[in-house]
Image (tube, rainbow, N blue to C red; front, side, top):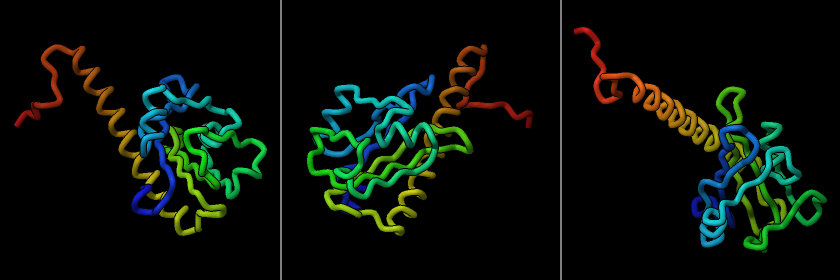
Length: 155
């Protein structure tokens, strides 16, 4: 995303199992690597952009972060001027958020937002399916002689 759209930074946050924190799972650049290794997370419902998005399930665009009283600058991303967060949702279930940052004020056009919403929806489906698969594997591992590799259909 960062390269394709020319944005400064992008990240994917996923909620922890109890829905208390949005945990950074993927992030671009050296700053992203440092945040991931530090276990970066934001509380759901906090005043952060990710906290608000994961709490409400609504996207949030901050066109000028310096004018937003709730914005808390990340010292690893000092050039951020605008930020966009889009929830990752499967139906009504909030799974996390896609976060994109730019070095320009008012950087996100309506076209950018539409494309990023589509991408966020696709990411949400992938995360939801991966979670379903993991739960199915776990359930099958507790059942004798069951496997996802081979299912007898009676033919």
